Amino acid sequence: MLTVQVTKEDTGRTNRGNSVGIASEVPEMRDPYGILKHRAGTESTWNLPSWNHPVAQSVFPLFIRTESLLIPIGTAFTISRFGLLVSARHCIEEAFDYHRLGRPRIDVDEYDLGDVGLSILHHRMKASGITEINIISIVKVKCTRETDLAYLTLDLPREMVPMPSVPISPIMPRYDGAVLALGYCGFSPFFGISYADVESARFDWQHDYHHDLRACLGQVGPRFTRTFAAGLPLAGCFMSSCDTKQGQSGGPVFNLDGYACGITSMGGDLFFSCASNLVSSLGPALPLKVRIQLLFAPELRASREASLYDMIQNGYVVSDGSERLHQFFPASGSTRVDQPFSKDDLLHIYEDLRSYQNRTPAVP
Image (cartoon, rainbow, N blue to C red; front, side):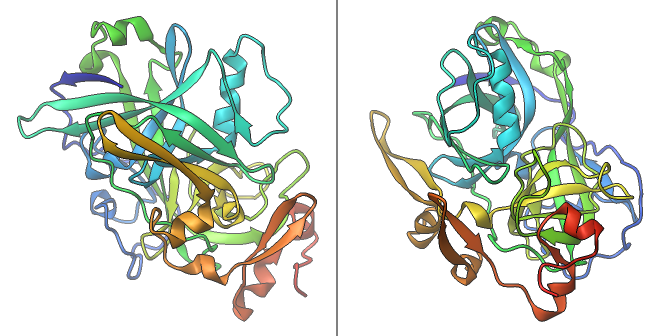
């Protein structure tokens, strides 16, 4: 872990976004991170303070780390204080573009990038008023073949830094319900930061680096139970009207109860006639084996590997309990996960994009 300390000036400034069709009031939306209080009027997108907002200890900019550069590629967030994060698989695959062997065939669910790594940028304001910035490495990546989900294991630093976990909801939210997407965008410098300058503390984080922490409010559209479209492995995804930007991929999407119910995967403007994005639900990854780090002392640590479902049952990951509503079926060497839907929602559930375009619900 690399640590630098700087005095940041914009700890309270909130930049405004654009307003596009969303109800001015979001009924009873739980806001444990204080995101909605920065919203003005009826706007559906807005920026939180770039630095030192409390949610920044749980939601992080994600970087590719080459031999010479730190390159921003997206967003990640922690779901366990034992070093387990979630991000987007397609962000992880971008790292292969910088691998000395090029982009290999993506047919495995555990990645070893060799000479290319991944890191997050963690920051917090200390009691002295100084912002502490930590560059923390990722040591393990597990992905699902059928979805855009990626689970990342951190190399926990010897000196623990506060990293509150985000509670999750593995079930997809109700049709037409409100959701809130959060993530980083507007990175500068976009093409990377000299890693040597970061290591030697020559890089000026206060004046030479910038990101926006952007919130987007939207409503849930159609849900898709199988793969979304050819070449887009997004099983168990749903459309929302959140107007996200590049860089927010991998960031959490919160439901009305304040639980992360998915990640931002990609913009949906090519497929739908409105500003929208596609959200990968967390449910399909419940059988995936993920790894956590147990830190007993600075020099004494151990790792544990189990399915995400078991991690929830053993208290390493906090959820709303909806994982118990899912059904699991063996399917072609993996496990298919089905979730229940309410009767009122059945007309808005489709197997894939084509069935949506043909208006053929998965359950007539």
